[in-house]
Amino acid sequence: MSNKRKKYEKHPYSVRLQVVAKVLCEHLPLRTTGKMFDVNPRQVKYWVSLYSRYGEEGLRMQHRYYPVDFKYKVLQDVFENHLSLQEAALKYGIPSPSTVLMWQRKYKNVGLSGLHGGSRLWSEDMITKENDLFKEPEEFVDPKPKDNKDLLKEIELLKAENAYLKKLRALVQERIARESKKGLPPSKN
Image (spheres, rainbow, N blue to C red):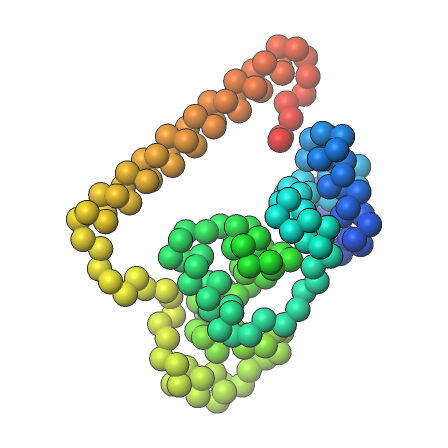
């Protein structure tokens, strides 16, 4: 496989199911499984998450039309609850986190009217009319100012997250050190 980034290609349901089975039943690492099927390990992890949450139906999910209010609701949830794109996609049954990323970019660049339709381009007149109708800010803004109590709580949460990430990093470094002592190449999982 070359170092160039592969053009996006869809994988049939049968391949997705085989990939998930290798990870869950045979306990193969994500990276190894990804190499076997020529799939990015992050995609493998996402398919496993979909399967864990929705079962086989999660692997069958197809891209579909989403109404503007649904897209806006997802983006609000991402902002307000600090969800990752993958968490939001899993929570709302969206087959790909990149779909949420695309909505985020369109909303930031064009506003609410950017969430209309799929790849269809909107005329300047239409965008202006839509923005005049809704008068939404270009970015999500928390409507209520945070008081000291909320800010202190947020600081505590961020400290806890930071401590968790430091511990995780230490565990990963420890694992790499153990594997290098055994003469194994470090795994990326």
